[in-house]
Length: 612
Image 1: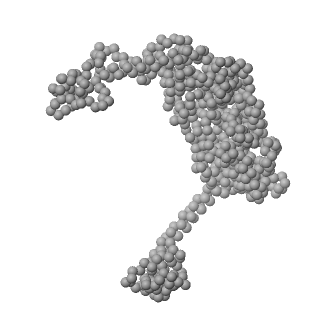
Image 2: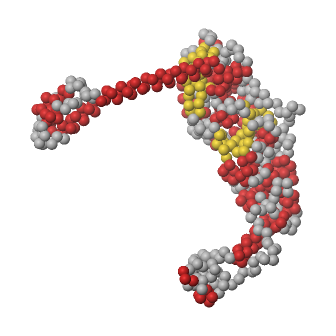
Image 3: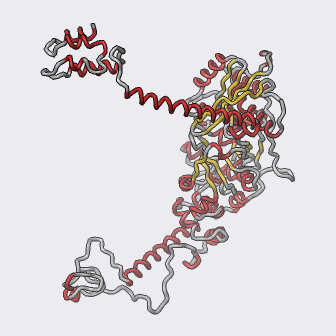
């Protein structure tokens, strides 16, 4: 959730939609609870272990397809305020009125329900088997994600909680859409600061006014627009001090203390305009109606100076006195607005809440070593992963699970080959053979790499070689899940044919691991392109020459030419000779039939003469 009041809609204009290469070789902190909460609909519809399925496929997909180094972060023990807010939200959605009781503040459970905890533990066990680093926060997971991002340990955060910015995050990825040309919806704090002119403390002040995960109510009567206008009136260094003063009831804020671009400071010059003068009821300008009938005023321009023009509907005079009156009214209205907002804030008890401010400004959200957080990516334990998923998904065969893991294994293999070239084999059996072609999907290029089996013993094969089994399992998996819920289409595409395997790989990664093979592939591609151009040019010239030559009489016509010829014969005028038309080029073997035909013959006879 994060900040209340549709906070994401406020940030929407500053979103960036990045492409596939945005997170290539970058570290990303992922709020694991965010992924699991996404499966709430599937859990209610009694889908079978949706949290494990999406966690498995998304992890493989992020690691292999996008080249991301994911770091998963777990929620720790929630604060008492967060637990109270969670219970208050439960009562609110359940329709239970707790205004007359103190149920939401007593007997608060700090832990989540058992079902959610079990889902988290299952996902953690799977991620550790896949070799992914998993960190546990002291409190909120998004707080630790933001701290890792702010301190430079990771390049971005993947979470839907908008309060990640309040914890100090500099780059937040709200949404991941694998099946699009721009899959990442990214928000940079620098763009928000430039567009909204708001710093981190401003955002914290807005959350205190409109509500957040630790205080759902905020200040009564203040929405997002009003809070935005209010916090813009102060600098980042003074915003908290002003909130403390207003919260204590100190409403003696003068207009000079409010830094607002729209404020108008009264002019103390002696030459300033005097109070509003009398205006003509006919033209609306300063002066009397009687004087304006004799001659036009300085504001009205008429021919021969024959009097003023009648004022239009909705007319506003722009004379200095009227301008001053309007500015004074706007200033008084603005001052009344500030007093009204300050009165709303002063009515709240314990505002601003020191505990919430300290929580957002805290920089100790995890347990680190002296060198920092332990971020290491190990090799996946393939057989243990197979046993784990086979236990939870009995319809998944071991061959299917190994095939789904192959993109992650091939990516690790290519990275290892780029660092330390050697003669090792992929999954101990397959060696790099060649690059088949360039594949483009959603505007993203990838190499289709062909792997050759180097070991002939099929019994020890880590990846099956039977294509029919793979197709059967894929069909079963598509039927098992709700469509459009678990990102079924993000499953990696693998083609197994006998002793060959085809996988989609990142071009840059293949080039760094096998530069000579990539150079050969590019050279062969250029040669094929040159040959295609050379062969296409003579054919186009020859086809144009052949079209200009007349066709011989005895050649059989094509179906389009034949019907075109018969159509011209049927449209012959009564005075014209059929022999002349039938002897024209393209008539072919139908010349004799054209001579015997006559426009006076019936339709059945002409059809019999034409088709025999």
